[in-house]
Image (cartoon, rainbow, N blue to C red; front, side, top):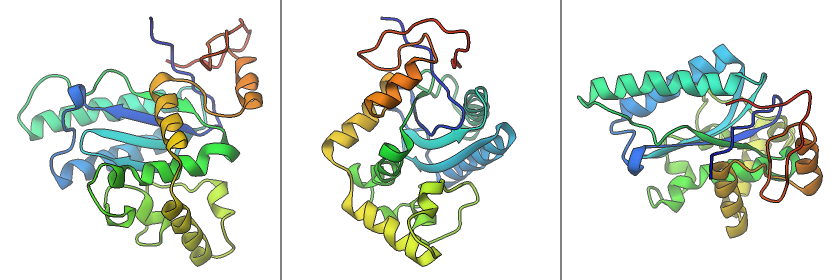
Length: 233
């Protein structure tokens, strides 16, 4: 079965996963993690992409980001991917591919899944057994939202601002959400929707997306042609 073209919709949050080839490490030293974050910050600014959350795992990356344009997210990921491969190969004296093909992504319904996606991303290092709690992991956006550090890469989504009237209240509310965690179904849905490219939301959200593009947006929908497609490869 041919892969579906990626669907990029300005103004909607996108959950992105980029894996190392054959699950090989894509970060070896602290400098690698930092260089990748610096690249994301540079090109997110360049291409108008707001990065809300991230977790850099040893062999894959999670991002939650909202692009301003159809082309912003693909261009950001392409620029980051190419420059990071050159850096990584030069630094670690290797050749060849680093990524497992193209990045995977999908849109998530803001009011239904955005906060759950942030919590899911924060808990990746915990689920992988790298740290006992999210606050212990240095290469995710959790520290920013928990008030442990200020991260210049992160642009909080308006839903985060709605968690409380003061920074302390927002931080406490967010930490409580992470401690509560996500359900097994939410975790599966968030993973599979990004890997397979299916939009994650309720029926109305999915139907509205489907009306705007010929590309199928869920496993159970068939696309219809439209004069204003939202496709971006």
